[in-house]
Image (tube, rainbow, N blue to C red; front, side, top):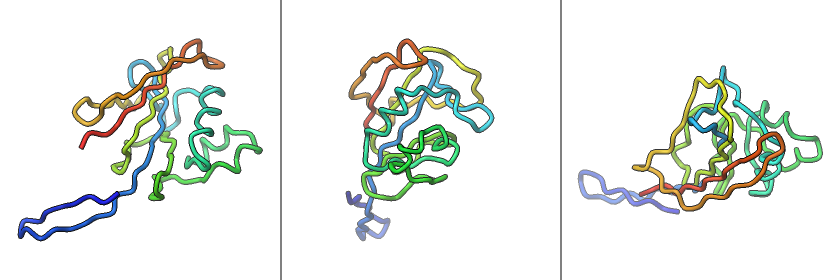
Length: 149
């Protein structure tokens, strides 16, 4: 996707913008990491994340939670990818700027967290919600957000 920017001198600059989906797991209060580690894992969430795209980008730490047979679908990256239509599993840090779609797996339990993310209604519009049973969590809600222009 191209974004058009008009400079102060009215010249137009076309910039290629990679669209990307970022996946994050949050507790009910928006907590997602504690001491640079994600707050929780659930094998049903891991399975669903692998079904999102042929390759999912994630950290080495997160990839270690997957079985060896699943690792062929994982690209190790400590930073957000710049590939077109990439899917990135965010473990720590901030939502990458080129994220157009945000998938939030919201757990039904609170955990100690020193980093929180709460999608701002000024930046993100929720477009769907789905509730399902997890393996270690009775209820997980998948919230899909679209970035507002």
